[in-house]
Amino acid sequence: MISAGLYVVATPIGNLEDMSARAVRILNEVDLILAEDSRHSAKLLQHFAISTPVQAFHEHNEQRLEPKLLEKLKSSQSIALISDAGTPLINDPGYQLVAAAHEQGIRVIPVPGPSALISALSVSGLPSDRFVYEGFLPNKQVARNKRLAELANEQRTLIFYEVPHRICACLQDMIDVFGSGRIATLAKEITKHFETIRKDSLTEILIWVQEDPVHQKGEFVLIVHGNTQNTVEELEASRVLKILLRSLSVKEAASTAAEILNGNKNRLYQLALTIKDKQEK
Image (cartoon, rainbow, N blue to C red; front, side, top):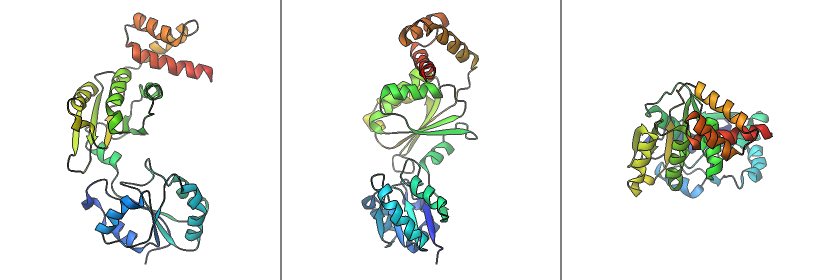
């Protein structure tokens, strides 16, 4: 019989053959399974003949359920936490419960398995020794471009999640901010029937996505090469913009800097916004 505690259990991101034997055993033996969407998880549990009681556990009820769950755990019960797919807590609920369990001395046990971001990184053909996971970028273009500008000089590999209706806009914004030649890998529908891994420049990836509506469907992981260019140019751009922003608006400063430096106006505009925000804080 398994020990009491909170088990954080990874489940398949598409292919059910990726479910580990240990994960099946743990889910069979715990007292309760917490599932992000109990209806979605029912298919997985039925496939592996797991009959353990299931409780829906998501961002809307996490805070309300936490005290009762902690009491169960403190009374030597065992609970497994799963998400809709992959490793829990990566853009999924559960952080508060795990943090509270640690604070109260409750054992938290990882049951590792599939993770979309790690799976995509491993086949991306991009540097994997140092990377930054950014999750989903902001929905609104202004906020999205602001965040991209903050990441423009990041030298580590960047990993993003994106949804179908935003993938084209996201790629276009990356081209505007990072440059059209920045190398990236688009991983689509990992481990599923229409799995696609495409490494190319951001511009070529956008062209590929736009050429067929089918290419815009599915779940996306976008891995972008870090900035390997000489940052002296960026430092000079920042210096020029700081001077111009003393007397000009962000738009005017970016336009003038583009003329002075023969640079990309959109990229300089985003950099000017970042500088202005820091100056005002």
